[in-house]
Length: 133
Image 1 (tube, rainbow, N blue to C red):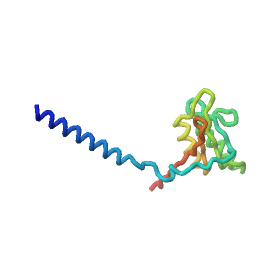
Image 2 (image 1 turned 30 degrees about the vertical axis):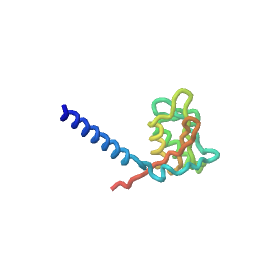
Image 3 (image 1 turned 90 degrees about the vertical axis):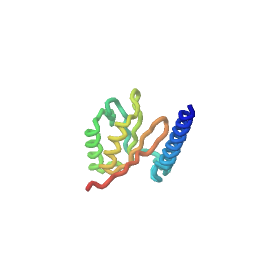
Image 4 (image 1 turned 135 degrees about the vertical axis):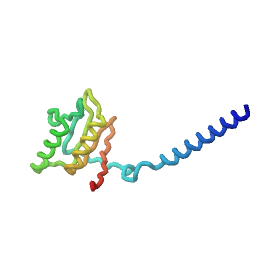
């Protein structure tokens, strides 16, 4: 019986040490860039609405991410304002990760700043790029 109690105590001690180690590793996982305050502009050059199936509503037309990239590229080629883009929730659909990832890729490719409005709060979509070797 004593052996069982002693093993149980060692197991609890080992479990406690693992939890403490994981807690120490998880502290400070966000970079300083991610913690920086967001400088939200007063108005946005383009406003998009998230719709179903990962599509976007731009100028009352449902567009796939590829079509949206082409439309925004055309806008940039025509020298129309293209520095800030806001993604808002649709009437029936909310902003999903698919929307954010697609918009982030387009923003990196075309060189504009993307923002997303969720729950009445506007946040910047920040991306990190890596050099391909």
